[in-house]
Amino acid sequence: MLKTLFDIAVRHLLGRRRQTLTTIFSVAISTMVLITTNSLTRGLLDSFIETIVNVAPHITVKGEKIHPMPVNILEGQKDATVAFVENNIQKLEREEVRNYRQILSVFSLPQYEKNVLAASPYVESQVMAIKGSRNQPLLLKGVLIEKEDAISGIKKKLLGGDISVFEKTHNALLVGRTVARDMNLKLNDEVIIIPASGKSRQCKVAGIFFSGINAVDNSVMVSLKLAQIIEGYPSNKVSGIALKVADPFDNALLARDLEKITGYRCLTWQEENASILVLFARIGYIVFSLVAFVGIVSGFGVANILVTTVFEKSRDIAIMKSLGFSALQLVSMFILEGFIVGLAGALVGGVLAIGSINIFASLPIESSQGPLTKTGFSMSYNPVYFFLVIGVTVLISTLAAILPSARAAKLEPVSVLRDSSL
Image (cartoon, rainbow, N blue to C red; front, side, top):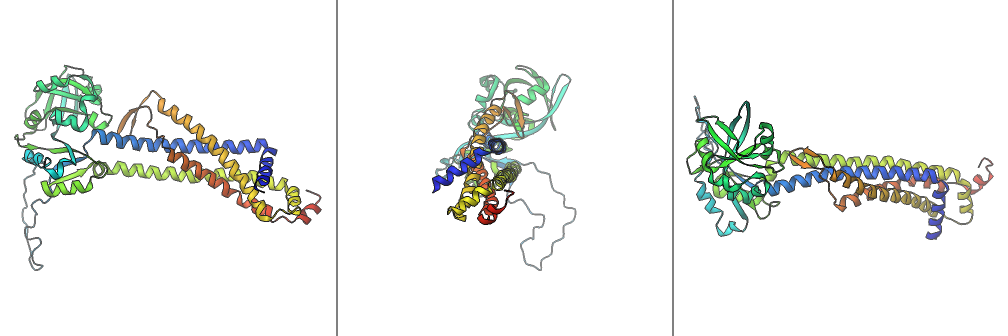
């Protein structure tokens, strides 16, 4: 019986080829747009996470004490205790990690050495860079290049220059590509660095790098010792310590444990990029909402063709009921038609989506996608999203057939066959 119902459903659809093909085409286009849009948004998120995990530190030990000195020194005493603070004048202390070498030794302990793969101390300073008539405020970061390479892979990201020159030259700079473009810098150019306090220094461009993270590419790197001199730090102080861990996606407990051990604030990459991750999550919700709404529109197209079929095939339906077809079998037949149209349209849309995704991914254009700079669009080929959109589309098309099929099941054979207008 199922084969008979399937044959009749196919005949109904082929009987109105133009309308059927138009409906399938509309379902295919909506499916293609939804899959492509979802691929773009998910691809951008996946690319962002991949770039952050590969380039940025997984955990950062900040120069912020977890338990600073309270203003009210009697806080936590008896309820009857009252404290008055007059002329509270405090020294504005910089965020710094003191005795950082001792903290680095903590990461080598047996309980941490398997989880902490690399640690790189750094000093950050806001400076003004001047070359000729051009000047630009930027972030200067002092690093130990070997340790920094273990975190960000900076050596592989050099577009020009030599790390050995950077290591041997006291006043050498590694310049982000954005800075190099904005200031028209080339290798061996002289740049004057002016810190917020202290004297200016003349530095030399030893290399130009490109990481893909806009904030990093808009900065310069110097040796840790030079940055300490510029920022006025003694040799035992740094701004923070960057860590690379074994499991970057499950690092919250490790960060909290390190806070207790070091006494400094330890932020995971998820916490530092929380606002961007929330934005991506909201975009994902919007895309899935589009899946539902556009799928409903496609469902209306499927319902339209089936309503027309019921109207034109009323006499055939009446004859089928007279021959013993039950109401449930007729409902199943029209639901089967909706399923066929939805499945055909969704599969065609899936094939078209593969083509559109490949086209976007291969476009030879450089785009600044939020916090990243990429050549071509970052597209996701995750089959889960293909099956999800196709499944939702087929489901909505099938559900859209319920109303026309219910109308067909209610037709009375006697009244239909007596009606001369049919």
